View 1 (tube, rainbow, N blue to C red):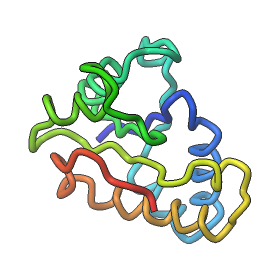
View 2: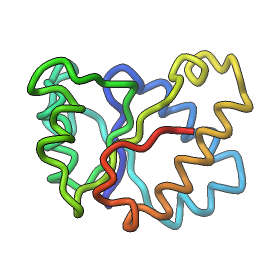
View 3: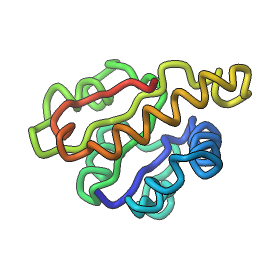
Length: 137
């Protein structure tokens, strides 16, 4: 795994989660994993790229996608893409179960639990390949 990518609508949430990780005992694990946070631009994607293109770009580059709850509206939706194209060697998608609670730091305990779950998944990423979608927390 090369890194992680925040979906266009959860960049702020990923920034909060990484900040929590850097300020806690999880920092050592983050540094050990040498995780890089990528941007859409670095992957040659526009912020309104179809889910299927975002997911494929992440799989090609070995990047975990962190998203809000992308749906199954249409053949190029994330859920449809996962159902159609996911294989045992593909990285999972991390889906924030409640992005709003993280972005506005309405619930610091929830944000901390989400960051902890994310780092736990990242530490176990090889075993989690092929699972499709994993929810945080």
